[in-house]
Image (cartoon, rainbow, N blue to C red; front, side):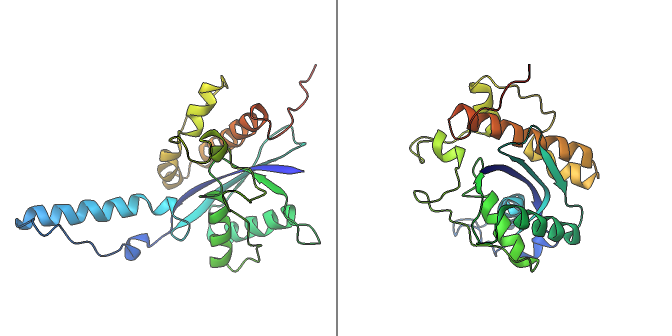
Length: 217
């Protein structure tokens, strides 16, 4: 049995306090240019905070079990809710012997699985150590498959979906999640996460990672 998952994340509160010190190149002499360089470099760090496991927090966790006909999304509009969702997730995917359901992702070995483990540790949620080894992980990563283990440059999930002729009717992109969360537009966050789970599932079927679901008559 396998489960397709996808996360939506934003930067943690206070991420700015974790920005690494930045210095302008030695050949910069003008104070205004030095200040502008430092400000831009610090902004670049903040922009990436939502994509780094130790400075990201989960705002939506979507999943679809191999036998499911629909996608499920749990919204995490607070850290307390995030912790609850993580506990429920691990209870769902870890059996009594400690075995973990195979988690199918797009870029999960470099992001989603790492965020799940990091956030669980930060929030005091008991979680397994997932195997994210490039060659030995039991958790299929479609990005690894589609790039032949990094032999060619990666594209976005939407790009691959379009290339395989899948319907990409999502009205939002991952870059808009932070603003949607700031606006408390949880319906849009839910719709985007569900769309990503659906596209990941469909790509997994096309790539032979999952068996295609029967088409309703």
